[in-house]
Amino acid sequence: RGGPSILLNTKRETAPETSTMVWGLVQSFKAAAKYRGGWRGLLEHMYTNGDYPFKFGTYMGCDAGGNRYYENRVDYPFGQHRWVEPGDIHNFDSSSISPEWQCWMTSMNDVPPSQEEAFIESKMAAVPSMCRSDAPVSTNVGHQQQTYNFHHLHNLSQVRSRGYNIGNPIVGLPPGVKDSYYTQPGSPYNDASIEERVPIGDLDEATGGGRPFKSDKWKERLRTSEEKAAIAAAQEAEAKRTLDAAQAAQKGRIAAMRGRGAGTVRP
Image (tube, rainbow, N blue to C red; front, side, top):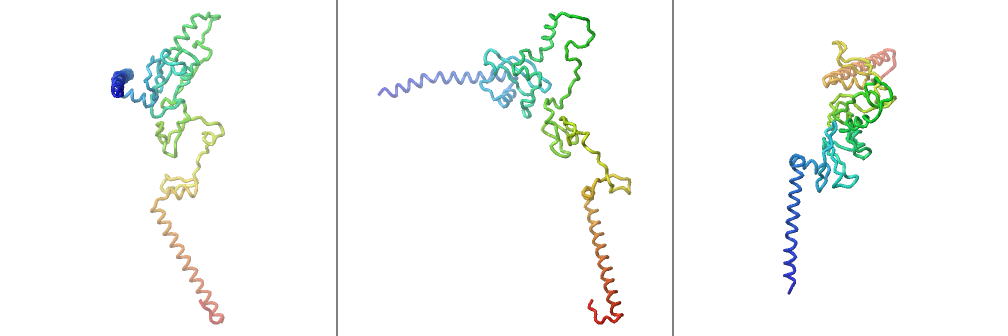
């Protein structure tokens, strides 16, 4: 007899807890949407990182590729306290993180690249100058040429054409543009190993040129359908003339043999 009342009391006790969980979930969504500048930023975060509950942290900086870096040492354990939100959500992998931020992400150093200059200057203030120097740089690295990364990609091995005159639409490489990845000397893809194309003829040589070819197969590919039809007709006419000439010569030989008394000669 006490079963229904006990079940009713259980439902009454769990109802407030469920409503609290739903209210907390709604508030979490609202806070995450506000933290990332709207629902689009929140959906991008869910699509890329897939984190729930949503991560909240301190914005530490960004790199040339638009990747945003965050840190939270209070709410997350070591190893999960730093994360990156990619700038290009459709073409991102671990190599998209720049080298200077890679060291910070893996906790090799605690100072993010956005604060390294101020950190180095603060440390150098305590280093006494042993001698006078006219060097324009303050480190032992010396002059460093400013690097250029195609479309902010740090792994240039991806910047390569996917086929002849196709380019690479994934990374935005136009057709006909040189690949950006490094090749060893002696590689068939190295510029020094690519032999210059020397044409052996030109289909438009009579009119000034315009369709050079390097082999007979290349020459056949460059011909138009009208030119191929004309060549086929000329070959057919030449074969007919050759056949007519052979038949005429055969008839002449038969006539000569009959004139010498060779008897009945069947043509």
